[in-house]
Amino acid sequence: MSIHASGITKTFGKYTALANVDFTAPSGKLVALLGPSGSGKTTLLRILAGLEFADAGSGRVQFDNEDVTSVPAGKRGVGFMFQHYALFRHMTVFENIAFGLRVRGRASRPSEDKITERVRELLHLVQLDGLEKRFPTQLSGGQRQRVALARALAVQPKVLLLDEPFGALDAKVRKELRRWLRKFHDEIHITTVFVTHDQEEALEIADEVVIMNQAKVEQVGSPQEVYDRPATPFVHRFLGNVNILRDAAAWGNTGPIHDNGRLAADGLLYVRPHDIEVHPHGSETSGIPAVLRYIHAAGPQAQLTFEVIATGEQVEADITRSGLAELNLKPNDLALLKLRPTHAFQDYAI
Ligand SMILES: Nc1ncnc2c1ncn2[C@@H]1O[C@H](COP(=O)(O)OP(=O)(O)OP(=O)(O)O)[C@@H](O)[C@H]1O
Image (cartoon, rainbow, N blue to C red):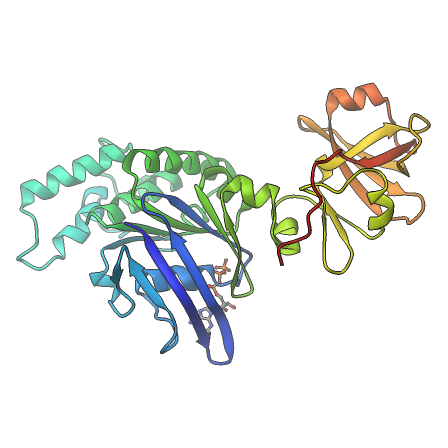
């Protein structure tokens, strides 16, 4: 089932949380709503869920071709999971998962046998077989999140809406669980929208990323598209490291400005650290002379921080560690910086 929202505006008093936002989650895809704190992600998710409504007269929400704009949450057939939506502490894992089925009206409530069967299936799906008698306090954080997911899925929702699903977990469990969610989604293919402010999380697992900033959608695309071809200076800064360089003309002379090097309307040039080439001083006739200030070589790549002699500005370059060994550069050495060679010059779309 696809989700489509258009022209959504939401104000809280004088504050505009969403300004004429359009959003689409294609059927069966895993879509990340990514943006900084306060950009409107949760408000949009709540409107998709029917827990909140757009301002009167603004916008529409459709599930496939059905208009659900004024349908309340309970009738939309969505499964939710929220970061702070704790499990019921006094109920076992089994009862937590069965909850949504037990509270149904008599007419649609499944029999006890059917409920047991469904809970067992779900426990298997979230890889928690055998833990049905435990209480939430007897589980790890990651296991609790998986129980919450099983609980959201128990009622066979048409779409799954997850608000910062792994927000409260430590970095390692978070990483494990997001890979698990990707695999899980590949198995069940339910249209899923998840909110996150973690760029790495969104880029690693989503089919499509919707980037929000200040109540608006800045860009929509696959992880590779939004990373490689940021449509706005905000997206360029928000997704990964970027050098923002003042003397665009001088850098332009070192090589054409390519896909990842973009000129903003104010004349600043945005270049990712891996698109800066480092050459030994004296080896080339062109290039920007700069002094190496710091080397961080803790990971697979070496991050070098340079100071441009002419302007004093700092420029970061990421190169391989073998590249660094070949250059044989030490702090305070002089080098020449260039833009990586290129195929096309591009300005921002907006
Ligand atoms: N019920 C409300 N009343 C007043 N203001 C609200 C309400 N809900 C949200 N806001 C405001 O709307 C803005 C967007 O909030 P929202 O929760 O959608 O942001 P977010 O992108 O999900 O942020 P975070 O990552 O911090 O959760 C925020 O400035 C918030 O303070």
